[in-house]
Image (cartoon, rainbow, N blue to C red; front, side, top):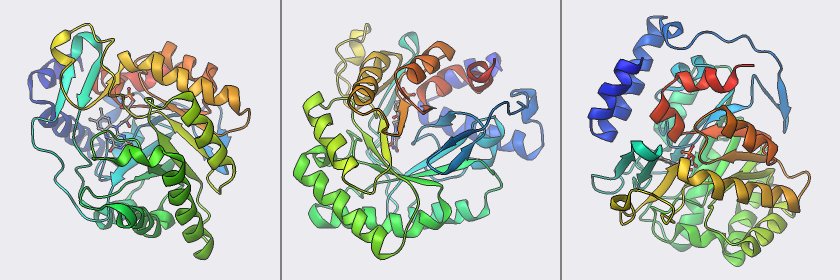
Length: 329
Ligand SMILES: Cc1cc2nc3c(=O)[nH]c(=O)nc-3n(C[C@H](O)[C@H](O)[C@H](O)COP(=O)(O)O)c2cc1C
């Protein structure tokens, strides 16, 4: 596997991403995935928000935006997969290059801008999947949508995916869609959560809802987010998305690259937001994500109060073996 990882590192990031996931798909179809990811026996099921998880490790949104790799990723041993971010209309995203890997610091900067094949394509993939673990669907707004249309985008996605999702994540925290993060403001967020709540009640949508937040919010802002979540039908929070703060990067050539930073340099910041939420709310359902590149980080997220943990950058940099490494006893 190390040989392949070395080859993938030489390729442009998006080519490496699609080649490695397509290779996983081929191995899965040939029933050969056990060569790189030994089958794990489930030791203890985890019950959370009405869902049953084989284990507490999942993929973070963005890894499989269109649901093209659900069965192969599921076969690696993840307890749950979050697909998306998906938008109502397919979109290309920002111009390339838009993903930058910093191997020395186990990190990535991306400014993809919600490139995806649109919600109808994802729904087709969800209908035909074989993976029987938990599936979360992360929903967002098209770049061209502003104001009420932006809120409407979330409602369109909610309506189309809810029958095929075990939970739904409302993503307001990507730094790569202009002004999206303004939805963290109290009034805007109240409006968004209220509209989603109304839709869910009107259409009897019962799937658990999570809000994915940015690590760049102040604790005061997080206080009002907690209050709004507690007053709504939302179940909980996913903390966190990528950060635009690059000040703790060692390699200065990456500091001026526009986009969201993920991986190791995000761990402390992201975990501190997670533990702040836990300190303010004992029973808020929490999914921790940001900077997990090994088992110690995974345990740190759980100790900080996460009920579940997701990975993205660690998986890209370390490869599929990271899954069994993290889940080993
Ligand atoms: C290339 C890339 C694309 C991403 N795309 C999305 C996305 O579409 N939606 C989303 O909510 N988060 C997205 N993320 C953020 C991740 O889901 C995760 O929150 C963040 O990377 C921190 O976790 P990590 O340090 O394990 O990567 C993306 C991250 C990366 C690196």
